[in-house]
View 1 (cartoon, rainbow, N blue to C red):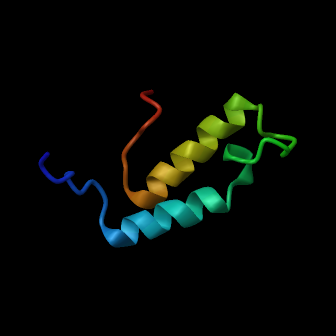
View 2 (tube, rainbow, N blue to C red):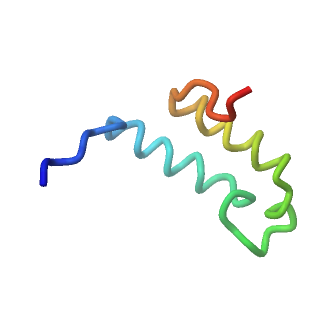
Amino acid sequence: MPPKKQIFTIDQEFLLIDAVKNRPQLWDVSHPMYRRNDIKEVLWQEVADLVGIPNIIGK
């Protein structure tokens, strides 16, 4: 099996982890805003912008 292609740099990986970690609405099921998909959409776009991935929502 060939090695996996590196999608992110190490710096981007750490940035991604920190960005998601700092937005518990994305991963903490006990968070009051966890089920708000409209808010999660905005937060995921913020994460993508920080990491350098253009427009992941497809708008």
